[in-house]
Image 1 (cartoon, rainbow over the protein chains, first blue to last red):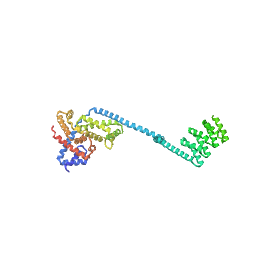
Image 2: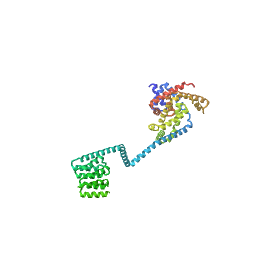
Image 3: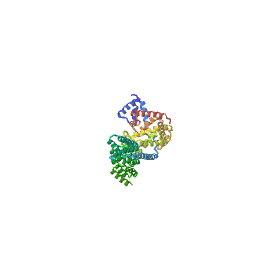
Image 4: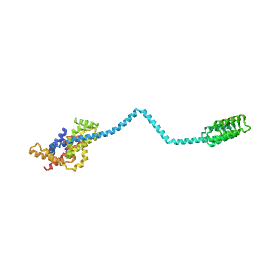
Length: 271
Length: 183
C-alpha cells in the first residue's frame, strides 16, 4: 500500500473516527514510514490548535432581529392565509348550501335552465313566430275565402249552402266576400241558399255595404219566404232606410197577403 | 436525542407553528454564525446571513422532510445562501478581524506564552483564511461544527470517502500555508 492510500485513514484518525481495525492498519504503516509519521504529527498539531481558534460572539442584535423577522413573516403568512381561506370558506359555504339543498338546488337549476331556454327562444323567436302565425292564419283565411267563393259557384245547392256557412268562420269579410254573398242573395235560384245567405249577411251587418246591399235586395226578392225574412232582419237591424224599399214592395200587386201585412207592421215599427 | 427533538420541532414549524422556530434559533444561531464567520470572516455579513438562513427555513419549511437531520438541512441552506452571495463576498478584504482576534487571545497568558501562542494562532488563523473555500468548508464543518464525515457527506452531497480525502487535502494545504507563512 502506498502512502497516498492512507489519506482516508489520516482524516479519520484526526477526527477520531477510525475503527479499531483501521487504527491498527494505520499504526502499522506509521511504524515503517517516517515521512507519514512526521506529516500526521504536524497535522495533529494544527488540528489541535484549531480548537483554540475562536469565533467572535454574535451581537445581541441577532436575537431581536430574528424576533422581528419572525413576526413579520408570521404577519405575511397570516395575510396570505387570510385571503386564501376566505375564498375557501366562501366556496365551502356554497358547497354546504348545495349539499343541504341538493334537491332544491337541482330543481332550481332545472327551472332556471327552462326559463333561460324559454326566454332565449321567445325573445329571439317571438316576433318571428307571430309573423309566421299571422302568415299562416292569413293563408288559411285566403284558402277558406277561395273555397267559399268557389263553392258559391257550385251547381249543387247544398254545396253553395256550405260555402255560405263558411262565412261564419270568416271574421273580417272583405269586399269580395260581401259582394259574392249579396250576389248570391239576389240571384241564387234556390230559396234555401238565399235564406242562408241572408242569415250570413245579418252577421256581417256591421259593414255599411252589407246593410246597403240588404236594403237594395228587398225589392229584388220575389219569394214570400225571403221577403218575410228580410223584413225580420231589417226590423232586427232597425234599418230605417229599408222603409222606402218596403213601400216600393207594397206597390207590387202580386205580393203575398201575409207578407204584405208583415211588411206594413215592420214599416210601422221602424218609423 | 437532540437531533430527534430538532426534527420534531421543525415538523411543528412546518405544520404552521412558526413560533417554534425561535427554539431552533436559540439552539443553532451560534454554531451557524461560527460556520458563516469562517466562510466569510465578516461579522456583520455573517449575522445577516444567519437571519437569511432562518428566513429561508421558514419560507421553505415545506421542503423539510425529516428524512435527514435538521442540522444537515440547515447547513445545506446556509451553503446555498453563501453561494448566492459568494461573488460579492470574495471581492471584500478578509483580513479585517485578524487584529481583533489577536486582541481576544491576549488575555490570561504570561508574556512569553502570550507572544508565542499569539503568533502561532495568528499564523494558523491567517493560513485558514488563505485556504480554498471548499477546503475551509470541510474543515470548518468538521472542527468547528463538530460534525462526523458521514454527516458532512450529506450536507455537501458527496460520498464519505470524498469528504475524508478532501479533509486530508485541506489539512495538507493548511500545513503548507502555515509552514510557509512568516511569523
